[in-house]
Image (tube, rainbow, N blue to C red; front, side, top):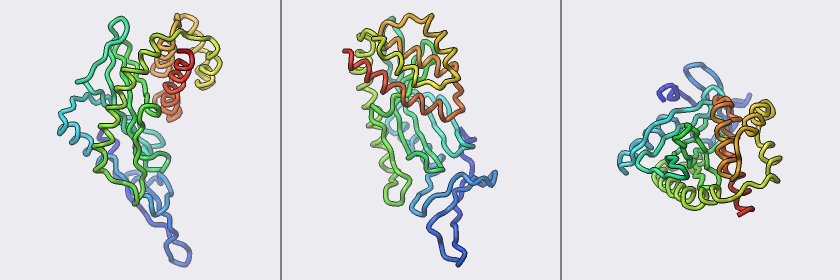
Amino acid sequence: MQDTFFPVIEDTIYKRNGNESGYKFIIREDTDEILSCVTDSYRLIKNEDVVSKILNIFKKKKIKTNFVGTRQFSNGAKTTYTWNLTNQKVETQEGEEHYPQIILVNSYNATTQLSFLAGVFRLVCSNGLVVGHTVGNKTNRHSIYNTDLEKIDDYIDNTINSIDKVFTKDFPTLVNTKYNNRHTSKFLKLFPDFIMGDLVQYLSSYNIKTYWDLLNAATFIATHRMNKKYESTFKFEELLYPNVVKWAKAEA
């Protein structure tokens, strides 16, 4: 985690006449790399500040966690942090254990707001499933008008509550709804072209009877066949769950 706490500074951009332009650079100080060019209204939220705030909230609320790890994109311009919530566990079919996750997303290049995503960790095969956008993705803009780190407490509560919906409503629908092959083409289009060979080979050997089976097959491919270092993989993970749930509900 410490390697994501590199020094970041703001550098005002001036016009030729010496007046401020209304823009500034966000610079990674240890490498002198310009991470982004943003407007003056952009407020820099440092990774270490928001992580420290979250850890204090976990401690205050007595939330037991296991830190999973970080993922950095664009030389640290965007970073994710993932914690398993170990004091909550749900067993689904055949005794499979699932733990809820909280995923923090922060950026220095204005590509994303400060975000909290709900996630689910499937213990049986170490699959990590991002379920964020349909279960209460909580965001906070990097703006001098809308950045209140004190609200993170509420964001974490809302994210945890949104995971309850996944376990009590979405999962039963996925488990109990028979898979309809009419969704196969849409499913395949979610994946990048380079993975298609592995995907088809894996699916041909995987007995997909329900949308739960489909989801687990997809998360296995994403976890074990796609490069976690690429931001495109993270974006795929965000899109996967809401689409599969939508298809399942259409058939339920």
